[in-house]
Amino acid sequence: MSNENALEVVQRAQALVGEGPVWLAAQQTLFWIDIKGLQIHAFHVPSGTSRSWPAPERIGALVLRGRGGFVALTKSGIKLAAEPFEAFEPVMHPDADRPRNRFNDAKCDPAGRLWAGTMDDEEVEASGRLYCVDDLKTVRRFKDDVNLSNGLGWSPDGRTMYFVETLRSVIWAYDYDVGDGIASNERVFVTIPARDGWPDGICIDAEGCVWLAHWGGWRLTRFTPDGRVDRVLRMPVPQVTSCAFGGTGLDTLYITTAAIGLDASAPLAGSLFATKPGVRGLPVASFRG
Image (cartoon, rainbow, N blue to C red; front, side):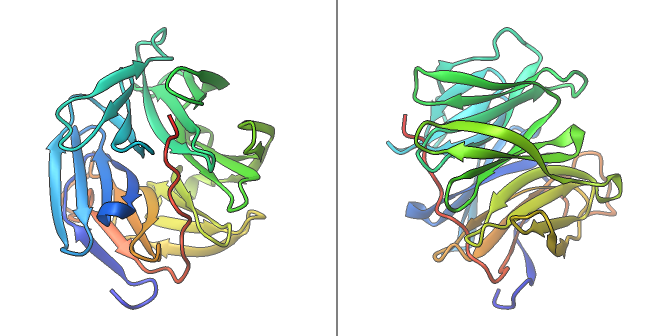
């Protein structure tokens, strides 16, 4: 894959809801999940080979842990896990008072704090919350009444945080203090028109632009830091779910997709795609707890 913007299927799958791509540089491997298909997938870039493991429940995100392994954001709370994903150690369950909720997307800020959002798993009530987990014992609730928590990301200087609220069709932006982990001054970064589908996962590149996956929109969009559309990458499947940079130089953009509700007219739905967008990503922050 050498041509800029050329799109390649790197892991053929039929993931019901492929999500949560995360790059593990030490293994040169892209991990991702199938939330509703109860699978954890891994694509090893140097060999082009794939592995998969069954998930014990719905996992919304896997986040790298600085001490090794992963933090798993699940239907029943926050847990620790490691390959081959046979054991999941419970840590905390801040949404235990809302049994219909599950964790969805999650990312770490540049200082290693874990930000994670929840949602009503039946997608009916605005019962979701956004949390900041400082360590394995300390959690702060930042936002209530979220209808569907989704993508998170930070600008290269760490001074702006982005948060996707899918069913409100909005990406929020916040002033962010990396020193104390405080987000403030909530404002609309972009609103997504209905014709372009629903905003889903995001990642930020080294130039500070925001890449957004559109569920039902057949596309990824790159927005400049002031919210202008810079580029649209058309996809061969409608349900584009998330994206993450990886590869030796963080110059490859990996894209997850979903097959749920689709028929044979979208044969590549649920697969993992990759492209060289001509810009690099940011190093992946690991959880400090």
